[in-house]
Image (cartoon, rainbow, N blue to C red):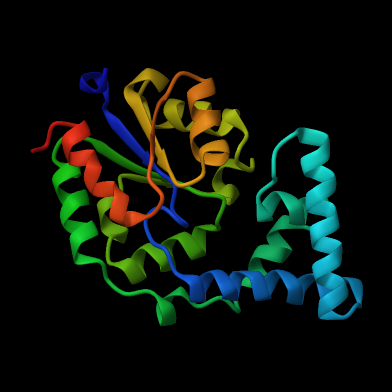
Length: 210
């Protein structure tokens, strides 16, 4: 079935890189923003975020993303993104990944490379640049481009249409099955679970590059 694949659709955070330090910066930004907007202590901000996430999970039957939780708390998405992006610094915490770049260069010879992320336009550019792979993708779709939040399957339907490839000719690659894979599979895409960049090398065998 993989012979029919024309486009590889990558999640970004947690898939193309992993960084506990950067994860902490994102988490600190969440707490800081909730505390500032609600006028509460950081400890209370954590409680508010966790309570909203639990509420959404109970209602939907799945754990929401951080972005989905922040929207669920009633925050304006663009304002939250601008506040966070001014404080999170992937440039300081990520390094160029030569092995990943080599793999993507090989993949690019045969496939269209696409990023689909709940992150922002600016942060996608900065993050991919810090890893040294920003110029390898044919398309990058962010929450700001699409206006929807993973795991909404409509995201993948719109992406396939935008790049001119049928869903069945796309392989969605990500670290979180319920966010990156299940919604893509729901519209007919093939999927590949990669819990970090060290697992992406298996794509060579899957796609017969070796």
